[in-house]
Length: 325
Image (cartoon, rainbow, N blue to C red; front, side):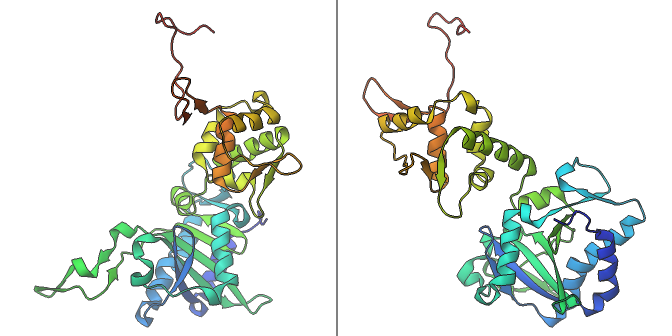
């Protein structure tokens, strides 16, 4: 963690060496798979201006007007504030950077015919410049892309002088002009909180709740997870399950033995290992486990069919009186 990272010092450093910086662009889709994409030499200045220089200029100029950099985890919608958090906390951003840095040779070159631009979620520019122990330093600027706003060549015309002409490109894109996210070493600098959270599907408050509920569950139940899977990560990205857990008092829920018996009665494939631990392989297993805790499965005494109860609505007494407490 680099909570002492000085974003203002960084901006001034980049401003001084901006002419020695080289840029490379990547698109990434909703699965955070990056794609290499080339750009014309005619766009070099534009790439640097829209990504790097715009962010650096904002930091330097707004610093004179009282701009502050605070920890994202303490964000409260303040004005004239940018935020910082650790890259390691934002799993999707960390994965994206890891793939670019360590799997570069395996990254495919983007083609709309092969990968479809409508599935693209964002664009990230990697900037490198001389310096550091490795001979170069690197930082990234990321922005969200609205694929729905792109113009497709097959259905678009362009105005050339006084007449319409066939659109000359497969896809045209208006690049976002606002500053959104910078990634410097192990730090994420957040210019726009809502766009950052949407871009990387990250919600700190939900993560804190997920961590607390994960601890409650693991304190009460013996759980076994597939390799590379953690309860925290599953809960972080499974909002409906997390919301259901928030409404439950885990400590008072049925014991593990009763839960396993309940699963057997409902003929559900809840797996256990030799140690008696409940096996969670993926989000489907987690959903089943939480639904069992919430007693969301039911066998009809009328037809013997099994049901999953989507919504539990408490009914009044037969005479219309409210239920007795």
